[in-house]
Image 1 (tube, one colour):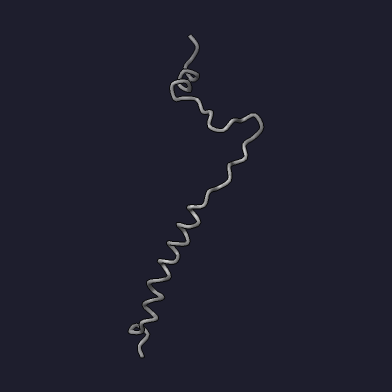
Image 2 (cartoon, rainbow, N blue to C red):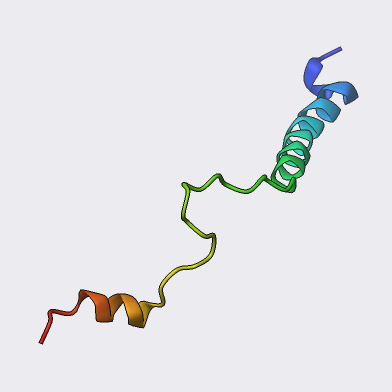
Amino acid sequence: MDIFHSTWFWIIIIAAPAGTIITTLARLSQKQPPIKLPPGVAPGTYASREAAEKDDAPPQ
């Protein structure tokens, strides 16, 4: 029988990309551990845009 007319051939052709997508989404959904920061750096304490622009302004 011709392979392109075989049912198992088309099941594999359809299942392989679907399995890859499901596996990728499952891996992406896992919670990652927090990033190790250098000593003295607190997470999430970023200057606001206005404060950063004020710090970059030349002294008057």
